[in-house]
Length: 135
Image (cartoon, rainbow, N blue to C red; front, side, top):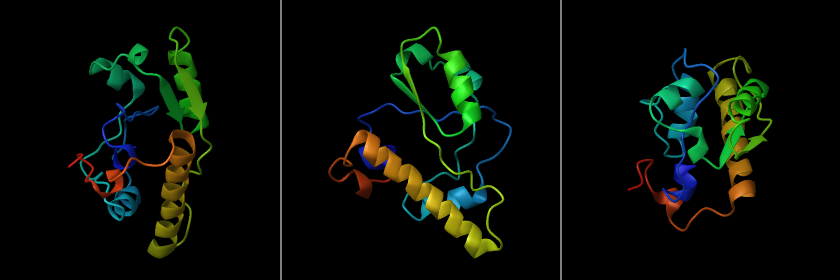
């Protein structure tokens, strides 16, 4: 999101669980498009709120799995914000061998990018040339 739209929108990433590192294939295919995830770590909705992100301050939660959609709907039943479910394929365990796995992860990466552009419009001028930190 930051890569496509810069910092015009406040974005946080959270999931149902925070018990794992970011998948190495995810890091690799995002690096190909200039998105640095090697220092990123998965965190849960609860951890996000513990760190000071109040859900009432958000307008939208995009859930990429049925489990995250259920969690988002449960957490937001007292807030006025939208929850959208984007049925994105889970690439974990798909493909045999490194190149096939990378191809599946690239497909998922591009599917997410396509959903963002369809939902939020054409990326801001020059935003895709910026580094992940906005420079």
